[in-house]
Length: 292
Image (cartoon, rainbow, N blue to C red; front, side, top):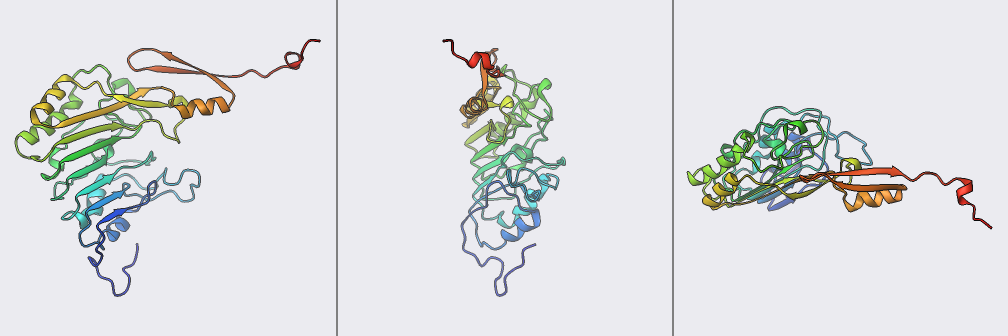
């Protein structure tokens, strides 16, 4: 726990914007202590509270030793609830040992206007059920962006729910796990979220730490027509990008080329591509000789 410097009191700092190091985590109590210093912090960018596994030199911040506790986010950020206007609370790909069923409640952050947040703060990864989030948001909110990591999706297909990729349903059909989106539109029309103007959903795609055989990229989600209609009627701008399964990012083709591997892309429709790898066979001595 950091100690308060001698002669310095909470609220003495005039800091308005704070960006904590990307890829690293702070325990709940440490983050809470830091946020007590600024008198009226307006902008905060940080990772979810947790304790990193020490000495991961190649992938620092990629694993934590503590469970993910969405309620801890609310507690850690409490010193800023009357001043924070913009909040970004999104992890890079991170391995958590477990996650409880709590949810991050920001409804008392009375001046918060822009929010970028991990889907883990609201939804359990690997579970398709999606309960309403409208009551967890402040009436002042204008924009929200929810980012899904590789273990979760906007509208997961039942056969894709598991510990790795969450690939969203490409059919465009309205399913029960989309009802929480309808509830957001209803909250605006009923005056619960009167300022809400923009909703963005992003499924995180391939990153530098992903295996190339699990590579994926993003495309526009095939949004159910009912969702499109209710958001339009409510005056809310809506955009969602979902993963396209097993596409080949340029970085993966670069790696395959440098590893001496051939690859072939096969389009199977419904945004599904298969990448076939085959290592080049060794050149025999007889093949390497030239005829005289």
